[in-house]
Length: 224
Image (cartoon, rainbow, N blue to C red; front, top):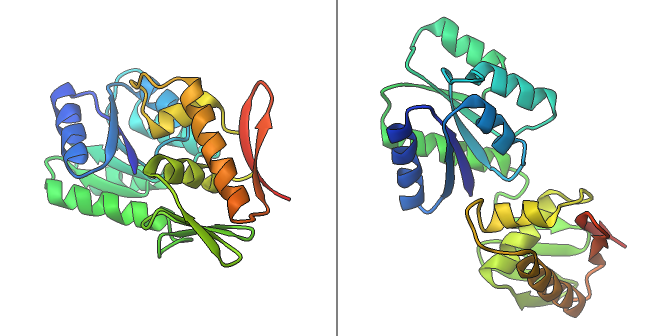
């Protein structure tokens, strides 16, 4: 699961990112609302931890703009304020949860897990289905019509990303940012290689699902 931390207190932002990475999450940190909005709109994050008081754009403005643009990524709002009115304002703006500083890190992790589960309610058993094909993200296994084949972790992550965005077009840059991260040295040929691997495995199990190349744009998962 990939998490975005938007927090202008740099030491706190880095501490949160370190905590998340220690708990096997992938985390990116930015330090103002403008960058937070740009990163969040990439649609590569599963949960956003968003401070209320931010330079350039405050947290309320960020969350409102995300929801206005149709981005439904779960958001945990952080604030130094604990008044009920601030909590209500954050939730009414589109936040999914709320924590007042200082907070217990175990509680934050529990809330991250809860929001991650909520977003994945369609697949509570780690099974993602599209058309006649099923991906088990825990077992790294692809099944279709009684046939199955094992996937590598990156193949599973790529297919999961495609399934969760089925019928949408994902650019190579979006895929690289989702699977390898913003600071990765991965290049477009990495994506091409894994797309090729997945196409062969989908064909092997006899799936009606195909990864279609949208020339000059990216890839889209379709059912034929």
